[in-house]
Image 1 (cartoon, one colour):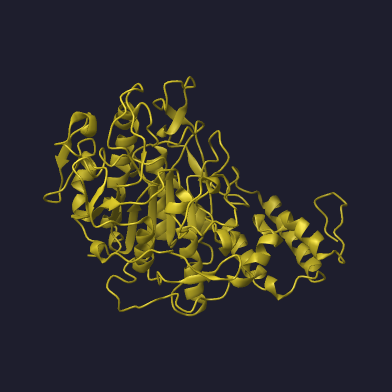
Image 2: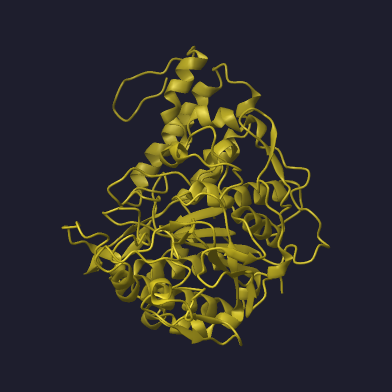
Length: 510
């Protein structure tokens, strides 16, 4: 039998399969039996996990940092300004030259301008869904339905890019085709917390492993620490003032771990021992259950979960108190800046994929960069200053440590924003727009000082070289040494290409 603490509740050794599945909550660190059973077709090493080692650009990157400003930045006020356009298009901001000859960006990004000779901007990203489709833009899913956005575990979802990278890295290591990841480090980390979990909305879809199984979800630490500044309002009707850590945070703020990778407190030794005893009891019971060989990978996943929970390497990588005050200030004392610094430390510790979200805090309202209203004040006072510090510091810090050449830094979002400014809201607004927007790539085998594609004079439509989000996924996988045509069994067993219809874009290669 299994005893939960001092409770005498029993789980008999003759439990039926259905009863076992109902007890899935006893799975190690949230890895329920029902999800373990789904791994039956997704745990073998894919035959083409490594692809062609002689292909241009292949395997140039060892790690990837995905920077995801949720809500979607405007292309006009970031990487594709239109200073010659009418004021209702170009807006209140101008353009400045950069360290890359012939490339101009928004004049409120002076530090980013100084590192543009390390960056390739793709100005011609396009897709048909002007919605907050994190799950579409970061997975191979070929179609999008707005109902998917509120259903992270919907069976129609496809695996998040970071989950695919983690899956492929494990498969490569098992096949002896790669060094693998340290056993006490996750393959795939999400920062600063489980997406949307600190806002007034339930977590939405996007960064989940779908039919690969929850083992390949991002490992989510969580950030504990107060905000020090009130963020500018998201809408005219907003009455609540929020001390937003993305606007300012304290040096005492910290990232912490727990059994699930998302709770607020680090576990005590007593709690760890209790958990291990529970798992040992569960193993004894499992031997008598009608759970066939499809649970053969359970021990491997359990060992990995335990290694992460007790990992000094992981906890040390997330301990920003080990950085100098000067370095922390260099990134900016904001949650986005400190998360970018933590991402660099995770790269140094051996993690191959880290996502840093600029997420909502307390008030969702479409999320942080969703500037339907108060567009210019939010950009000037809050969003662009935080981006300018953190993005430029991350690239320079990686370069100074000799890591930029082997670390792909990908700045991307769900979509762009309308070329026509809406002057009705206070502070004006730009609305959702997916027909043309910008994505930036740096390091990891990409070129510096390059622009791929262009938009029309208003920044509303692609003028040449259209690039889909799926192309960016395929290109990222290629640079990481993973075959972009890799297929894995879907929920019904059919082989599905993890990059969907994406093709590698050699235009971004160095």
